[in-house]
Length: 91
Image 1 (cartoon, one colour):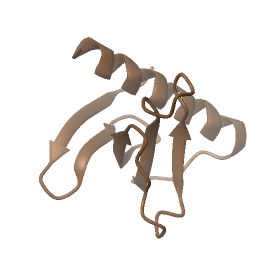
Image 2: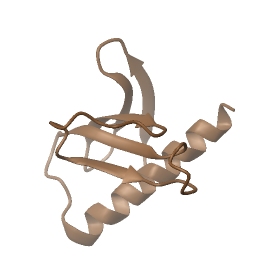
Image 3: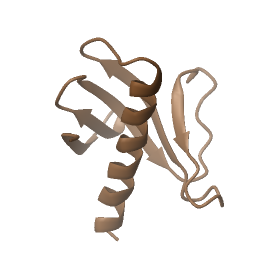
Image 4: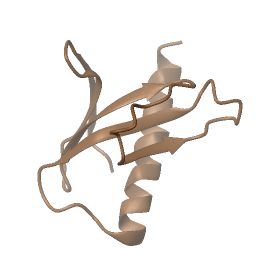
């Protein structure tokens, strides 16, 4: 189960907070946005493939050890599913 809080920060923009282990905060954006080149570490979900509904998670700050390998992949997939559901609830 994911415990995610979605919020807006005046400086950071859209923020995700994962409140259970492994805890982290991150920024997110949607659409066909190019992230700045210094955003070497970011994750993208392509959405339907038309790039306009792509989701991007970046600036992840881990508050404890980040999962590795498959556990990390599963966590990010669940984050994108929850984020998409959160967006759809607001349309």
